[in-house]
Image 1 (tube, rainbow, N blue to C red):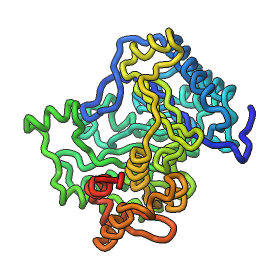
Image 2: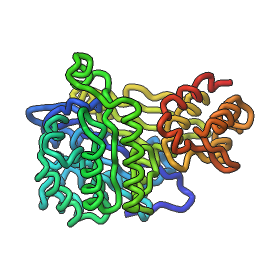
Image 3: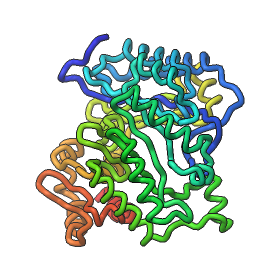
Image 4: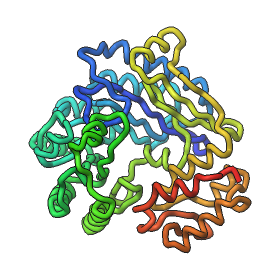
Length: 393
């Protein structure tokens, strides 16, 4: 293994495995159900695309790899191992590289998880979604409560650094029910939890049910109560909110996801993956073909499945920085923002908007950074709409 030099530009690598056993009714991710998958073909395709982007990212060192999906824990450990080894041949790794893999409880078994660990995965993220059988049934999950508990136990026995997801503010859910479930989860969690409020996403089965009147979602006031309760309880258990939906003990924040939120460089390979790469003071966006079979066909014939690759305008970069950075409790570093945008903040109406929001207790602006307040997090979408309007002025 060749390790990175201190002055090399760091980036993250996202690898998308698009297949699932079933399609969850709330999910709008690029995931697909197939009766059979020839994993050797997909390994070849992912390696080819990785090599294609390796030739376009000289001088970069790899600080994180994230296997997402879909359900990456359906991948054979041998496939994961070969992808990690291929990345190791293309880029120098930082000494503390984080390698994460998403897993569903229904596809977790002790021997397989050990194999992932032995091939280099050092962080596991489990899609538990609920610790209640009735909620799991509502969410269309393939596992039950017992399997979720077993998966968490297996993860804890094999990884110091693991996390699991829960979805709350579900239809008909009461605050006291969520309080009990969350406290149970916090006794099981080691150092990290991802806690998402259920949202109705376009094109999902839940959207159809919601529009037909079969699903009743919490009011805005109740959703705020759920969120405040969540923040208070996690804090009591020693977990700090570092991003709108992510909680961790100090030092266990997901570094790969922080790459996105801090608007740093990353490469995305696999169907529907996207990336951001910087060259000579410019930032480029990439987007891969979404349909798995179409992506694989393109890779076989052209060496990559890239649908779009283009230079982002300054206005597009500023919008993306705001969308990503204001999700973080630490907010956006002003010095870096100005350095990478040509001193934009001090010469725009954006700063005046920030001061206006500060007067409303929605944003905090200091000499070092700007971030949303606790009150502002409850209105983040409205804040972003206001800030993103006319950011080119």
